[in-house]
Length: 320
Image: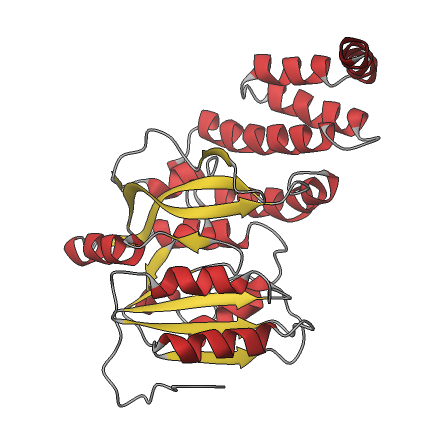
């Protein structure tokens, strides 16, 4: 653990920033610099190195020592994944609010100030998000995180069942609501969404509808391995929440939540070699659930091996 360590006798910071990091020595600099540029200065930074082998811990120590910000750097004894690392950061957090930042993402300068102001003004808000842009690794814009959502969502938990409109680096929550180990370490994917649903079900969701986060997505983020993890972890997790809230959900709500997941799984698999038949199965299930059936049928047709090979031959012929 490094300093300047923050003695517990010191005043409580407004926001604790929790950054889990694994083999991120080449990336964490941009994340920490984006924290240093925040207009809200009443904060502490907690970096949890998840047993990296590339000098991530030393890099974080050096950057934070130069930043002048109150900070703590700890190292996990074994690699336990982002949920375990975030849980350790939450356990160390002293702030009124906790915000999460992944080591490969960045915040824009007013992110913490605007979210803290929203939560200060609205004590019924148990989860605060913001608008973000998905970016590829070359810095090109892909799409916004969400579209056309209001600033306050009294039933925000319900929308989260089929639309994860809060990404991890966009989330802010009250420290008192998080407890000691809020993230389910048994979930390989979807652990953040699981927590957001639980938080949102105990209050309201607030959104700062300004682009305040840049989320970087690698090219293989939605390929077969990710789809398999979603099938193994996210789908059962969503089913558990559907069962828990069964009296508050319509049949259409339940079908929409399940249909969307099957659509996402099917589309992910359709882009992976040798996974066409598996993708068709999930796209067909999405169609049967009534979730955008024309979209699923179009995906089935245009990703068929014969159609894809014909398109590739046409492109080669035009290029020649």
